[in-house]
Each structure stands twice: as structure tokens, then as C-alpha cells.
Picture 1 (cartoon, rainbow, N blue to C red):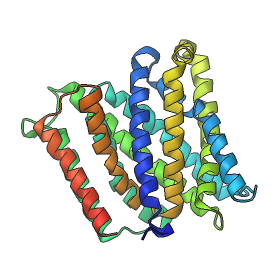
Picture 2 (picture 1 turned 180 degrees about the vertical axis):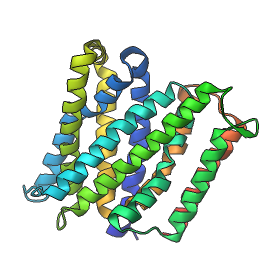
Picture 3 (picture 1 turned 90 degrees about the horizontal axis):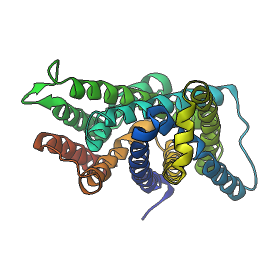
Picture 4 (picture 1 turned 120 degrees about the vertical axis):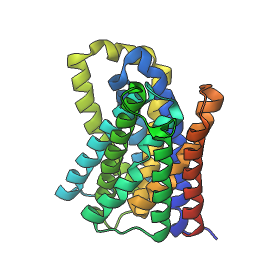
Length: 303
């Protein structure tokens, strides 16, 4: 029987699927508009959908909204900033390596989310989460190897992608903990309402900051994403759908568990990489992805 205690699981799966589609849409914009502009569309084109989701959440809660406080604002700033940087680094990594491998590197966030949750939120991790995290770490090590040795000087694109992907994972970890902290700062409210409320705050901040930078430094990039409005709109919609699900899940469950289950995105990304983008995946990379999948099974069986 599915109860509210288990509701975070389908919500997280929906977030991972929507995020995969968003990543693919943003990736297609990098060549024509640049990394930062492709990052920007996630926020500005997604903002109308975030506002619509908040309106629905408010209606379901009797037309009420949470009252923000200083802790909430501070955590949202951390979450929004981490998400912005993480997205830009992930798209930059995708220029260097295959789509699915870049996403895999970013999934090192689960280790960092667990550590940050313990230090900043005083939330521990379950034994199942620890096993899933360990398997993910081994999987990432396999992805970073070439010819039995870690990639280094002679393989600069691979090394660059590794650093970008790991940086993306660290930033996503900050973002996850920030949004979880924001949810905990508004107790007594429905998870969907808290999630969408925090999302609107975050996307307004992100749109203003990155939009102002692009207008001043790369105005041609804004023209490019405007011309590609169909793909930009898809990226914005899917980005908002993913974020609504992530933030709602964070309001229901510790960030480490949510991000551990969110590694199912690797399976979705593999399907996109192989069937849509026609990218070849090596046997070692496939083994690393397989370990992530095993980690998901371990996590779900022990919940």
C-alpha cells in the first residue's frame, strides 16, 4: 500500500525523468547560444510554469502562502546559487564527454549531500543509503579510468570533463542541502506548497542574476535563445517540472535519500545517449553506470 511516507519515491522518479529531458534540451542549445545562455533558459523560461505550479499549490492549501523568514531566505540563496553553478558546469562537461558520462560525474553529489546533511542539517544517512553511495563512488571511479589508469595529462578533454563533472556534483550537493534547509525552515505547510514556493523564490533570483550578466556581457546569447524559443520553452518546462518534484521530495525526505534514489537519472540518460544522441559508451563506462543501478536497487529494497 502506497502511503504519504512513500510518496517521495514516485516524485523523485518523476524529477529524474524530467531532468533528463531538460539536460538533453539544454545540451542542444550550447553550440548556438553558449553554456551560460543554455543555463539561463532553465530559469527564465521555467519561471511562468513555476508561478503556475505555486498557484495550484496555494489553491490546494486554501489560497495560503508560507511566511518567509531569514533562515528560509538564506537557505534558498544557497540552493539557487548552487543549482545555477551546477547546471553551467554540467553543460560545460557535456561539451567534453558523452551525455551520460557527464551526468554520471555530476552524480558524485550523493556523497557530498550526505556529508553536508550531517554537518549542516544534523541528518544522518541510513545503511541502505550508505551502500548506494559507496556503489556510486566506485562507479564514478570506473568512469574516470582509461586503459586501467586514471585519466591524466595525455587526455586533457577527459580530465577537464572529470573536473567539471565533479564540480557540478559539488554544486548540486550545495543546492540539494540548501533546498532541504529551506523546506525545514517552513514547518507546518504542505510539501508541495513549500517546494513550489521555494522554487519561485529561487528562479526569480536566478533569472535576475544570470539575465543581468548575459545582458551586460553576452547580449547575442540572449538573442540566440530567443530565436530557439521552442527548445528553450521545453527546457524551461522540464526544468521546472524537475525542480518542483525535487523540492517537494526534499520537503518529505532527507536530501541524501532523495539524491541517492535520483541516481535513476543515469538509466534515463543512458537511453538518451544511446538511442537519441547516438553516442557510443565503452564497456568500462557501462560497468560504472551498472553499479549506480545496483545502488538504486539496494536503496529501494531496504527503504
